[in-house]
Image 1 (tube, rainbow, N blue to C red):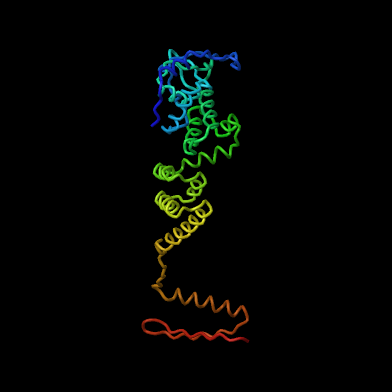
Image 2 (cartoon, helix red, strand yellow):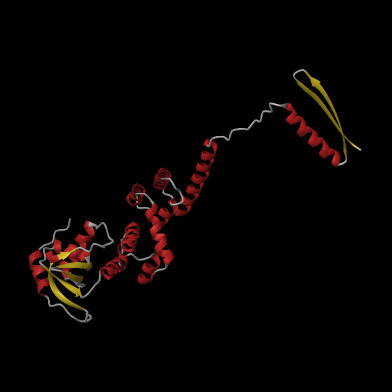
Length: 289
């Protein structure tokens, strides 16, 4: 863990620096805000924060100051963070009491959520599951469609839809993907398998053999074929239907109709029938004329 020397001295120096208002719009203003009065953005898409990266950011801020202020909006007596949670965590770690913030006026919850998404998408290390979950939450919370979200973010509808498809993977499968550092393309390939057990089996094989995405596609194709064959093999056999004629005269009528059809086709059909005590003996001879 990084140890920051002369923390209070550096923090005081940064707090005393006069913020510049250059580039701030009429709808926003740059002020010093108490760190403890800033609440996290409930629509923050990032679910995990790397402690080592936060330490590195804190060290950088301690050395050169906070170059980019946080973006907040005031709601009641507190401030809601719109963008800059990693910076907020870093200055808290440094023990700062105040931090420079751009206060946006009249920011709706919808715009706050969209600004949080854009801010995080412009930065690296946002996991694709976090991104997908963020899109799903925004659509649900704002009551908008995939098309509307795509339009507001400057993305295609298919891009948003493909991200959302990743959420069809169960939490257990997603956890294994994250744990083993598999790519988004690996995750997409797993969607072809509809069973969680098969997906987990595939993940284990991918990790064990270090499979590429192309090799993963081949593995899944083999698994699909094998699974289909097993289902076919284990499927209950359709019962054979055996019709029992209690009265053999019904059968004789059928034989007579068949012989008549043969005659109509120009064949000679001779039928000899001999009654027995318990049935009938039939002899049929078919010859060409």
